[in-house]
Amino acid sequence: MRMKKPATVPPGEALDEGLRQLLARGYRTVVVLGVATVAAVEYLRVQRVARRLPPERAALLWERQHRRTAKRLARVAIHLKGLLIKSGQYLSARPDLLPEPFIEELAGLQDAVPPRPYAQIARRIERELGASPEQLFAEFSRLPVASASLAQVHRARTRDGRLVAVKVLYPGIEGVVQADLRNLGLIVRVVGRIWPRYDFRIIYREAARLVPLELDLRLEAANAERMGANLAHRDDVAVPAIVRELSRARVLTMEYLDGVKITDLAGLRAYGAEPVEIAERVVDLFGDQVIEHGFFHGDPHPGNLLVLPDGRIGLLDFGQTLALSSRERRGFALLSYSAARRDPLGMVRAIQMVGIHLPESGMETWIRLAQQTLGMRRLELRDDDDGAAVNVQMARDFRGISFDGISGEALFVFRVQGMLRGLRARLGNPGNVILTWNGYATRFLAETEENAEAAS
Image (cartoon, one colour):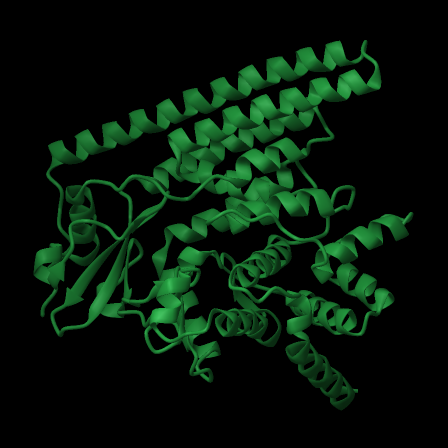
């Protein structure tokens, strides 16, 4: 089929759309800065009052203020969505930066929103691909199968009969993200001046670096293809193939994987799949990604993991796919290798390699950190919020430990480990994730040592 040239928009319609987007960005700015101003005034008041109180009462006052502000921020993020949802999720994964009430309130933010009208989605597709969905596809469902803060996904069938999922970025989302970044940047600078102890520049830089990457679906397509190539040797995994001729920067068409959510125990058994065995395989799958390849899916919540009728594990959504540096990859391999041998000195060395700096006082902190990495502490999980529970637990286990030198990618590995630990427990196969990766770690460390000897 010949593609038409990208559709042009009548000047009047383009002006109306541009005005709507401008007003929407202005509204977001007013709301965000208004909330920030109220919070700043309240914190200054608490700071003044707390100086005159006994330590216990001052601590309680600060706790109440943190909780009140965290709830307000969560409500605003849910109302405005977009980058604010993403930023809240990133912040909740940084226990070194925020008091625990913020972690607890922001960790529950869900990246799911009401879908946009089909007419907006159809216009976006036509602008990107040069023809309407009805012209491009033999079938195209007007109702999405999923909708999140940046995009929504529709089920369709290509002209040659392939069942596909079509991910479409929302019109105007690029401007919304840019406006949110400007607003957040301003707030971070103001907070840093008033309260130097709360330096959010690190998390702001991470959000400013990672979130815009999700606005170019060509990068997600490349991530999916790289992941598929890395895992091509496995016959127990399915990574959706990308349909390049129907994909652009704002539209991504990929193979539709039809299966059941990995936590659907009844569905698994209907397929003849054993939940305990599925849990073992999915943990092994992520060891393959993190240590064998240093390139991993950063958000293994149950909605992104399917089990197909033939028993394969299907991976979905490669917008948050991350790559480790060679030093970080070696650090996680050494962490697994040392943990398997109950070698505390090796684990400390590994932790330092991935960028976490342990305090000089050491031993008590080391025990707490060992509990986190060895999985001795049991998570209290609810239905579908593994990520939220993991973030809260990390806030408690990592309190007092400096993350100044850790990258967002390395921190996400710890979060992935926690999510996998909760997932395997839910599937009836509780156990330690980092120890399960020891086979990959042993092989990787042996290979790197051989390469170092050959190069010397």
